[in-house]
Image (cartoon, helix red, strand yellow):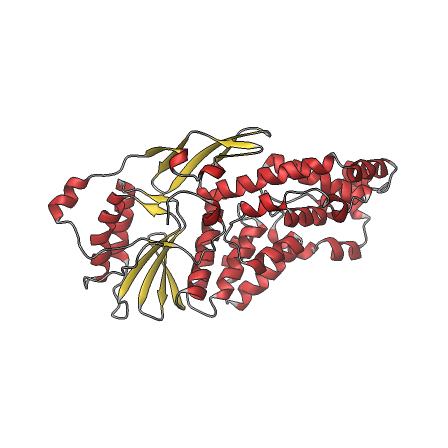
Length: 425
C-alpha cells in the first residue's frame, strides 16, 4: 500500500490495515545502538497526500506535513477560513465537512430556503421566542409528555448535563436537533463536530426546517453527494452511525447505559464514561457498539475505564478508533478472547494464540518516548505459554528506525524468538 493518503485508502474499512511487517532478520546490538532516534519529520504534503486531494473546489492543503512520533499535522486554507487537522482521520473528516459546508450554503441560496425563511417570519413557531428569551420559565410550563418525545429528563440528569458537542434545551424542544441529525446524515458529517463553521450552517438550515417548514426533500435538490462520498472513510460501525443519526443524546445515553449494564461494567465506571464531556454521544455510542460486537469477553470493562479518561477531542477520537479496530479485527481476522491494558496500550489476545496490538496512528517514528513505551511494554506484558506470536497492526506506516527498534523488543516480549510476519498491504 502506498503511504500516500488517497481516496481509495479513505474508502477502505478498518479491517484492511497495514501490518507492520516484523522480519526475522535483526540488526545486531551494535548496529541498533548506532541507529539513534528519528527527528520530527517535515515532509512535502505532495509526498503524503494523493494529488487529487491536495486541493478541492473550496480548500487547499498547506505545503508541508509535520509529524511528531504518531500523528501527521496538516494546515488547510478554505473559502470558510483556515483550519488545522492534527491527524489523517481528522483531515478526512475536515474534507467532508468543507464539502458539506459548501452544500449547506447552496441550500441557503435555494428558493425552498427563501420560502421557509418567509414562513418562519410569519410566526410558524410563535411560542419559540419565549422559549429562547426565558428558557427556564417556559420549560417549567411544558407538560412532562413533551419531554418524553424530545428527550428523557431522567437520563439527562444522570448525565449531569450535556457534552460540549450537543445542542441546548431550546434547540431540542423545537426539534432543531432532529433536523440537524437528518442533514448531518445526508451530508455524511458528524452532527457533534466541533467545527464551528459547520455547526453554524447546520443550525441555520435546521432552524429553517423547524420554523419554516423547509423539508429535507426540497433541500436535497442540491448536488454534491458524489464529492462527499469520495471523501468518506471514517471507520464507523454502520449500526452505531445509524443510531447516532436517529436518536437524541439522552436516548443514546440511556441505550449505552443499558448496554454497559448488560456487559456488567460497574456503575461507577459507566458513570465516569457517560459523564465525560469530552466524549461526544457519537464517541460513546461507537465505542459501546464496538465492544458489544466482541461478545462476552473479559476486558470490556477495562477498556471502558480506559476510554473514560479522555481529556481532549483528539483523545476521544483515538479511543473510538481503537474500539473500532478491535471490533473489525475480531470480525475479519480472528476472534478476540480477552483485552488487557499494559502501559496505556490495549492488547487483544486471540483464540489463535496471538497477542495483538492495534494502533490507529498515522506514522510511527522511533523516538525516546516510543522506545520507552516499547521497552516498558516488553517488561510489563505477561508471557503466558498460550501466546505464540505478537502482531502489531497500524492504520499508517512506520519509519525504518521504528521497524528496526521494535523488532528486538517484540521478540523479548515473546521470549521465544517468534513474531508474526505478513506482507504489507
